[in-house]
Structures are given as structure tokens and as C-alpha cells.
Length: 144
Image (cartoon, rainbow, N blue to C red; front, side):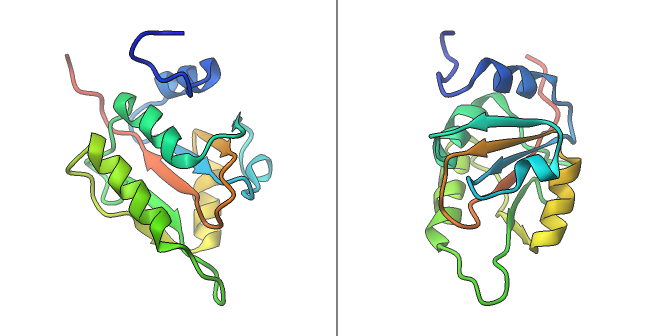
């Protein structure tokens, strides 16, 4: 355990966040997401929901201000619905840490999958809410 670091961050996830460079993306995926089919770098966060993961990750992670959409979720497929409270909870959590964060961009399933394939890592959560996946794009860490 480390002081000031959430115990929700496994050593592998903490190391991965450290190794990510600006412009790299992390997918926080729901339990239904085909993570291993999308990306060769998959970390497990079974039992954890995405909001607590956001709370743990974002104090250590600068969002990319040079990119128009550093926050991206998957749009529901035609005929499906999405719980609007998921996006609201994500944005509320994100803005507690990064108050000037932009709105969350939404893209269709297959473009989301394409981004997931190129992401630095996919973190498989235990979140069972449909369409709970979110991509975070890392920015430049400011000098201390």
C-alpha cells in the first residue's frame, strides 16, 4: 500500500498508468466488453465499478487538453437504450477532479472498438451496466 494512492489501483494498473504517454488511451470497460478480443494488453479489475476506478485514476492522470474529445463513450446500438445516469455519474466524478473537463463524446460501437484496439490498455471492470465503457486520453503531465 502507498500513501495517497487508492488501494483500488493494482500494481499492474499503477505501472501501466505511469508508462502511458501523452495521447495514449485507456479503456475502462464494462464486464460485457470483449476486451481480450480487442487488445493484447488487458488488465482485470473484477468486482470494481467504473466510477470508483475513475476516482482512483484521475488524480494521477491528466486529460489531453490538445485533443477535442479526451473522454469518449460508446453510443447505444439502434434499438438499445442507455441509462443516462451512467454518463452523468462519470462526468460528475471527472469534474470533481478536473472541473474544466469537456463533455463526454459518444461514438458508435465499431469506431469505439477500433479505438479500443489501438488503446494502450483495456481495463476490464466488474461493472455490469450496458454501455458503461469509457475511453480516457492522457495529456501532458505538468511540471511540478
